[in-house]
Image (cartoon, rainbow, N blue to C red; front, side, top):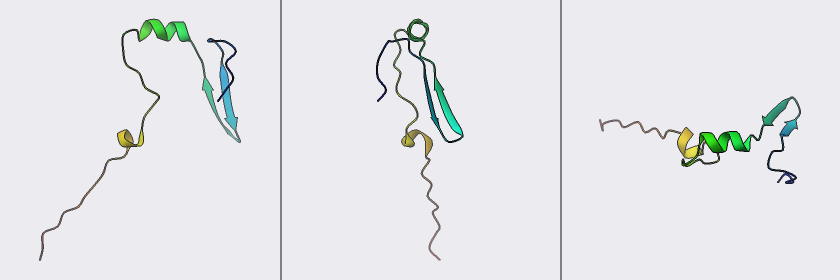
Length: 58
């Protein structure tokens, strides 16, 4: 993982022509989401919808 220097560090993750900017505004989000449950992002189970096609016997 990334080294922890301070709780308010900003990180930029980059590879080739793509980049991800991660601002860490800890105190802003702490006030906004106080008392709520948060998780790390969308899982495959939340994105992929299983599909089944049922056909009658002929």
